[in-house]
Image (tube, rainbow, N blue to C red; front, side, top):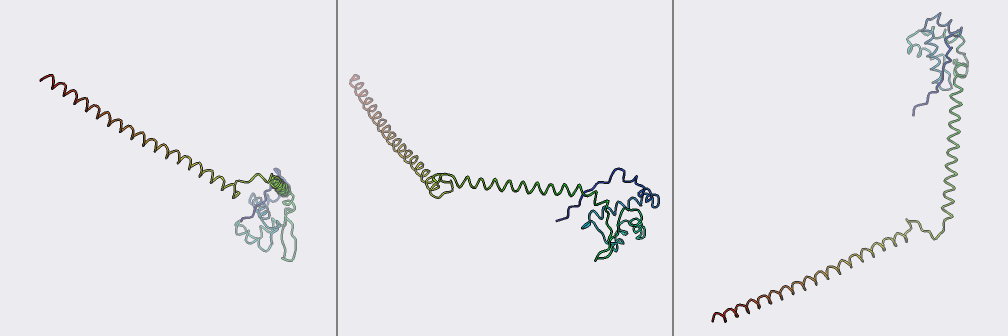
Length: 206
């Protein structure tokens, strides 16, 4: 996970400082660019400090000489040299002041996050307490006996529908048989009537 780089703002009159004007006079605008580059490097560095022994790396990045960078660091009041166990490092007290609003805002966000997390924890505890105080006769849906009751209810309902459907089928079959029987009777009656009519006509012709 990449480290978050602190944000800082230059004062709008930064370039108007006497030391910055002197820097620009000595090295043109390139000197101003070198100073800003060094400040940004410190802002990104751990503890906002950088070893003087490694400025050759910065010189390669900026395409300038090491003596020029040394002069910018030591001659214009923008940076301070400090000696520690690791050797000589340079820092910027001015940069540290510019970073104060960033760290203050970061701390406020952390505090707000802790407060929010604590509120969520308290709310969860209250919800758990309310659940524990529910009437024991109220069974949750995932209770085994409750699920079994629901299953049995559905089975009984299905059986009832199935039984009703079977009765309807039986009634329909009986009704069809009675209809067929009536049709056969009507056919026989019609046939007898035709025979009687034919016999009557034969007697008339005789």
